[in-house]
Image (cartoon, rainbow, N blue to C red; front, side):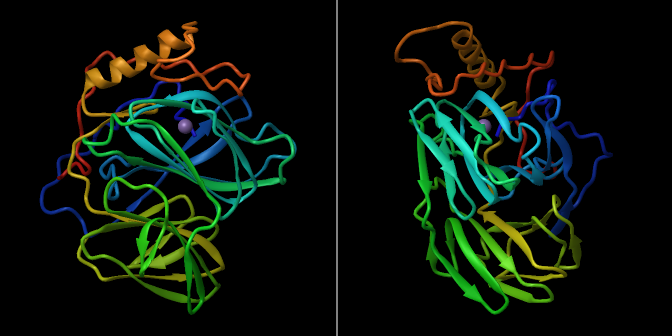
Length: 334
Ligand code: MN
């Protein structure tokens, strides 16, 4: 997944100043963003929100579909770079083909995890393959890397066999971190959790969680009711720290993502597909990508190794804004 907005901006805050403690629950409404091309897929982007930029280290949340990809190009995201983050690709329906500069070549299918750790830099592409089911539905989430790991080596991993457990009325798959004693083998860099829950119609489910974590709920198919809110697909319900359980009720059967983690205390600059700490981090990453995209044909030693197996044209970086990018905290009141 790539942020392909032509003029990505900082998440500027335009509401009047508020005061007081951070809210304990907060419903984040998504923005609708076209993802590449004239017949682009629409994605619902709940993170970063205008006020709430993160849930634990989770800093970006796109959900999409179900979309019929049988009559159009589907998802077509050409090679593009990332720094300072992990991309978590998760499908409910369909397939996506991942290629990257490490030589990874991996289809992701429903119930499987594609996890790419960008570290100091990696390029990848994500496309609907020629032979694919008609419907595509899923999510892409980004996890910010902490200071001590953010310039580490790039890495890709695929997990087809993730741990899970059942509760009355629901099945749970642990995608990242640990939940209810079940731990995912996926690489993590801060204390966090990511899980998929399939809850049956009319059921109420209670899941034990870590009180030191803040959490977010993202229904994918149908609304859920949780902690005093009705949450529709595409929206994210934020739940603050200090609770031992998360409880929700499904109107209809639905897939639901639960994300969470220890509040991330480092201020970040997020611009385009980069997560850095200051303006200069972003300027350097953009320049490295543009230099390379415009014909640096060294065989190795590049910050963003080319995605040699993808024959499409790499995405150009957007222009930088005129103003310096400023680091932002995880919440505007933090
Ligand atoms: Mn991407």
